[in-house]
Length: 168
Image (tube, rainbow, N blue to C red; front, top):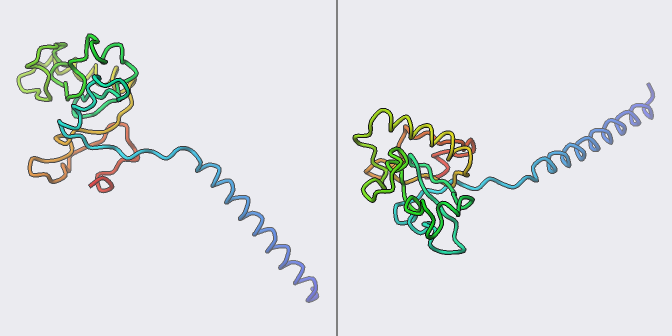
């Protein structure tokens, strides 16, 4: 093969490679244009209380099993003066388990719940809240130990992009 033929082959390979790089880079760029996922938020009790459905232009949040859901879609149920507004703006795990709106049940504490109540809690958590409402964060007590250190046993629900090390 002559020197001219070698140069032509090198140019052809270079142009082909450069063209493929441009095309592949554009393809990757196009695939990556989907909206970025938001970081999962950590809520204290006072943070969560701000989203109790009382303010018109504010989202409505409630927590079950330490998972904070945006229940704004169910404003007719959880909004101001709605039948389940008592559950909004707090971790209402016990109330959901007992199907109760009593003030003493509006807590995260599951101490003393019966097996049936715990099963009901798991069913409602999995089949209603996790399927209907987006997860916007977790309560601090679910993620942190009492001394403020990360809870190594924490397992995020439906948040594959969430990593404890990214959040702390």
